[in-house]
Image (cartoon, rainbow, N blue to C red; front, side):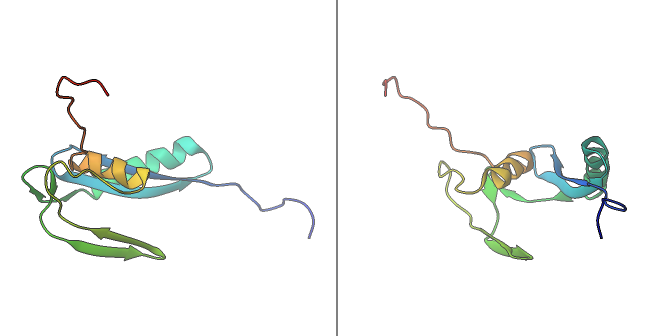
Length: 111
């Protein structure tokens, strides 16, 4: 069959909402335009809020593993100042949840 009859290009968006204090929600949205996909994902993520318990306001309370399709995520509790070693999308999600990213403080020394 030739031509583009019946074919429609669709956009998808992943949106994460949170308050940086342990409350976060995420959702996927699809639409014919990017703006429609973002709106749908934002509204859906606000409905799917969940509370994540934080340990000393910088890390998770316990180690866990989760899998969605071929994607596997391992999460370990680490000491303060360790930082995040992960993909930039997961790092952004951790920021929204409230997991702190390590930023070294200069002690009056130039590097």
